[in-house]
Image (cartoon, rainbow, N blue to C red; front, top):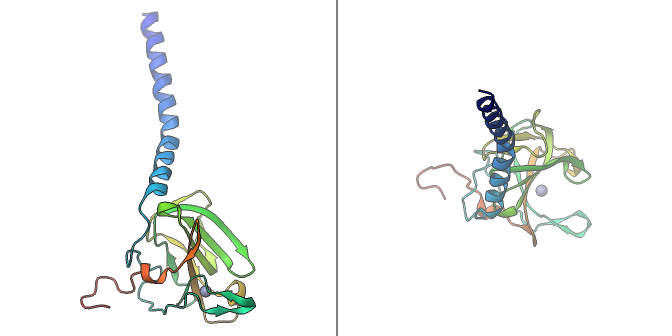
Length: 179
Ligand SMILES: [Zn+2]
């Protein structure tokens, strides 16, 4: 009887330990899958502000001899900004140019940058997993966009630097004859 009890106790501890470890094992697996996932191809990314058409302003001249390292998508202040990829929230924070920004580590290790936010999604935390289409924040004019029409600055960074997000984004959702 005592031996049975001890055996059951050991089994219970093993099950408990496995249950405790399981979420971190799953997290590590999901992270590894994210890093090895294929990077977005042409017109594969869902629009962060569905229905808001925008121009390719990649590489346009900006103040201080800088070039525009992304695209600007104009939308009414407070419009929810949707993540274009699944990923892990790397950073939530403010900087001089971008204002309130969110950086998400996405497929293939590319980083997706959302800037000039009015505010962040209230419960968004660094280290959190998001899915494509999840709200990350709301359109505003923070940072060096202060006083300009509210817009999202969206950038994609690879290990070799910024790339143009424009050709990767879908502008129309599923409309026949769109182009
Ligand atoms: Zn911009």
